[in-house]
Length: 88
Image 1 (cartoon, rainbow, N blue to C red):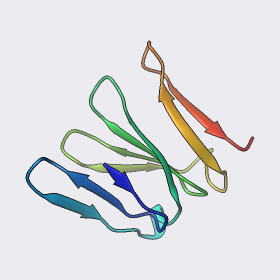
Image 2: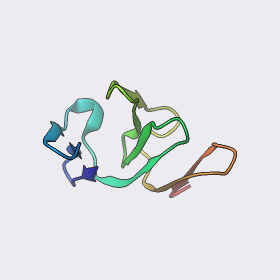
Image 3: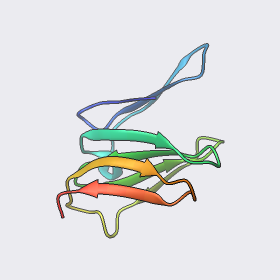
């Protein structure tokens, strides 16, 4: 998984690249990418929110309460809670 400053995200499955182009719901710097225990990929998108890709690569954008925030880092705790580092 690779994130770019325009909000684009690229996934490499070992054989090919899949490109998730930036859109209105994904138009901020990608500052961090992590994975939870269920295999979901969790992305910090600055000023937009958290983007989650499930195992089938279905995308969910969680904007509240993160919209307009500077999201710097993500961490999944040992009990699978998402910790978000921000400017607040």
